[in-house]
Image (cartoon, rainbow, N blue to C red; front, side, top):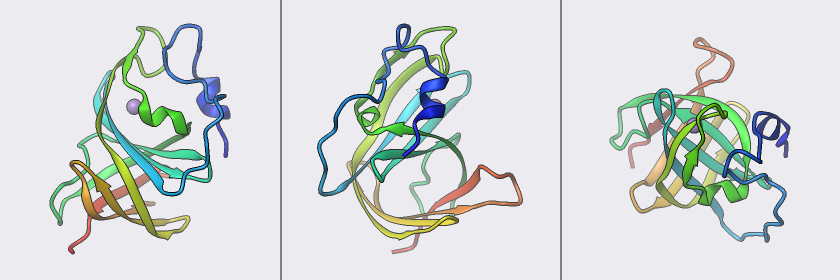
Length: 151
Ligand code: MN
């Protein structure tokens, strides 16, 4: 659990985003959210609950909905759990300035959760089924690929 980077980038007096200091009750199932983020470049932020935070990836082309498509997912800083409910406008001049909307949310079941590979079953309104994230080391340290697995 490490929200230092998240907090260091933000001025919570200026942005309506959560500061991560709220007490969050323990949850029995893991949550996920995909937020459509109209920042300098439109991207989709995938966030998966793990050990009390949301592991996060920015996916410029969105989450692939058909098997066979692989999209780049760039790992970003862990976010607080309550960020899963955030929608709003991050003001100009603040980190990630722009409109954030929830594109999908739900729960997931982790099948594989390793340093270089994550496999989950998504149960959302738009996303359902088995998804795989694998590190894409040739591209860069923070780069992963995400794809939908064949059922
Ligand atoms: Mn973002």
